[in-house]
Image (cartoon, rainbow, N blue to C red):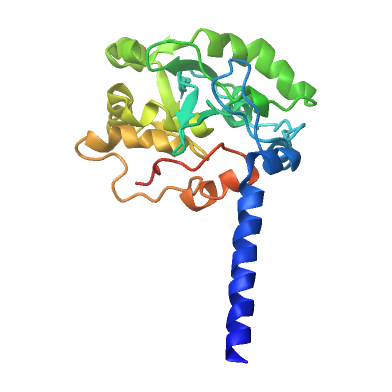
Amino acid sequence: MYQTVELFSQTIACSLCFIEDIVQSTMIKKCLGLEGDLDDAGIGYEPSPFAKRIGIVKKTDYKVVEFDKQYKGDKKILMICTEERYMLMANGKKFSSGNHPVESCHPIMHLVNAGFDYDVATPTGKPVCLEMWALPQKDEVFLDFFNKTAKPKFDAPFSLADIVTDEKKLSQYLCFFPPGGHGAMLGLPEDENLGKLLGYAKEKDLFIMSLCHGPAAFLAAAKQEPFPFDGYKIACYPDSVDKQAPMIGYVPGTFRSSCSF
């Protein structure tokens, strides 16, 4: 009886391993919509059709907020974006990423409505890389703002390196905003100028805001003394969720490392 149960258990274990191997098969994943396609450049993978269906909205929940008071000052917000697109995964494949368009524009839409103006900067002034596959295609209000207001700034951003070395340029801003998207993990966490900017913002008691993967950019300040965020708690996208992303094909493989503080 014991031998029969043991044999049955071994058979079940082998069957489960076989099923897992089948599910991980590229062909099967493709049939199930769990395998992403290469981007237009043929370099990196976009999320799978299934991941796009459950993770990307066609219309946002943006609603105009009527503010009792409008900002009347001349200080602006500086959005700090990545100029890198491809994230190398542990299996050697590349994820076609960038900053998330909704996570970049939604907060700014509200702030513009409140009377603020804004600029966009990347580390060297190269165009912003965006996850264009995440654009909400049926949101007319969002697309109007994106195309008329945001895209020109994304296409021709300022150089963060130039801003940091010019006190006059720095003094234009009262808030610094690295938006979300996995692209916030590309180039920004290692950028020394961004680290100096964050240290400057803390020293001058200016505003710093971010969301989702955006706080990965705060790692740029790791060498600042004192560390600007010492003693703070930061709410951001957790590594534990990112570890599940390959299962549904949101990313083409597991991450090589985390961006934990």
